[in-house]
Figure 1 (tube, helix red, strand yellow):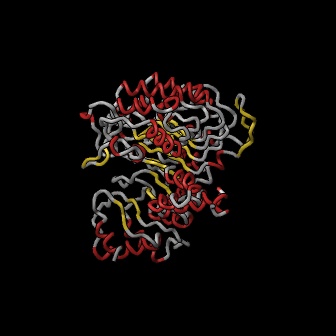
Figure 2 (figure 1 turned 90 degrees about the vertical axis):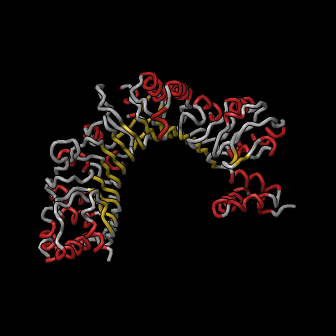
Figure 3 (figure 1 turned 180 degrees about the horizontal axis):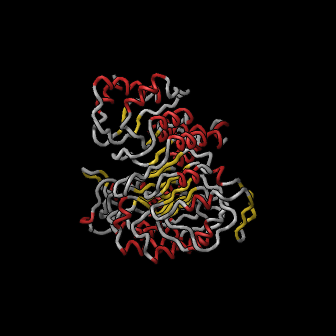
Length: 490
């Protein structure tokens, strides 16, 4: 007779989850100690998987084969072993699993809530067909909630998506380096996937190399216009119709959005969702910041969605990424400063191929930025260039380190032509030492125009240690900072 404590599922679940996290290899023996523990333990152990391999290996050994590369492909009744798959996928063999074997496989599949499919390996079409035909309704994972598919043309084809189309799906990510190389056949499959996605999704990420294709744009736009208040994250480089953008701008629970195009021509809604993360892609413009930052707290209503009051996006936005062609000037700054609770501010802008320097702020501008956004943990204002034509000096670094005490990542422009004199004035008290407790350990730097004399290295390093007491090194692209870094690490 089991101990009464094992009849309290909530308590047993806490114990089991802790065991699986700390020592997963001990979970199976633990499950075998008591029949009442088996279901809870194995369901916790199988909650998250990173391939089909473990699932196929619950079948009898004679239905799959393992070679030097590991388990290679799955069940089959024929001899198409030429298509064998390397790495984490089983290979077809001669004997079919029995009905009981399929029941066992489906039982394990029903425990899986999160599945991450890697980009390598290829399951034979016959294998995928058998999986589908031996799954009720063609769905192998009936309780799957998260699907992260690192898509590659030679791996599991997108046509197999129905295997994963669980009614409980909440989060889907179709991405990976292979998505930029998928064929037009795969593109057609992707369009079909989008058309059958559940509109109850909370998180959708699709990154591929066909952003401009009209069928993909139409399918994605149609899907998004049918989405309701459940959608919290939409990350995709697919261009959308203006109607779809307008609909997204009214979703009350949207928290993360990647925008890849400019402002729609149609009138925007008077209130926007309380976004926490916003990524303006290359074809988007900073005009979005003016628009999103200009709205007050209010009430959002969209179609059948209940009227919802929510905070102003200017208060909720925590992460902002700006497009590569952003000019870092006073206009940019005035837009950014509306979002006072930013934790991450990132732009991939650089000066290569651009006339002049894209960084046009002054030391006073940077002081204003740092004082207004003291919660920043990551500040990346474009890769420092080698022109040394920017108007900011080490005084801007001191402002950042004084105000942004939680900062961990910093990439910004500062002029190094006068670095020795600037550091001397800093150390003599001419610029003020501030109260810096910033814990930056690596500083991204630009071109050092001349070799700092040996007698000046100690001064420059001492100045950097005043600004960033925890500084351990520089990340540069020309090796000119090596002498300073060596002294810094002494």
